[in-house]
Image (cartoon, rainbow, N blue to C red; front, top):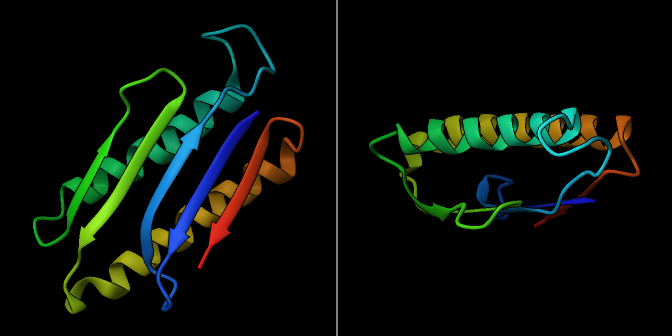
Length: 109
């Protein structure tokens, strides 16, 4: 099972996320659920890294695990960051609803 934990501040903007595990719904390299989760979170991480005003730290050192922390984001980027947060939560919820045996989501405020 893929465990997704999304951490938010009091204003519901992203503080960080951890994604770990494997869906196990198909052989390695053919699992569409794993691929969907990977694309969603990898794209979010790369999008954050491209924002020069937002500082992030993260890694994907182990297979089946990715972590990211938002270290700082200026007030002028809060609405943008909240939009990205909403996108991640909606995408994760959709994946969980469509694959309840393969994806578990926790949103922590």
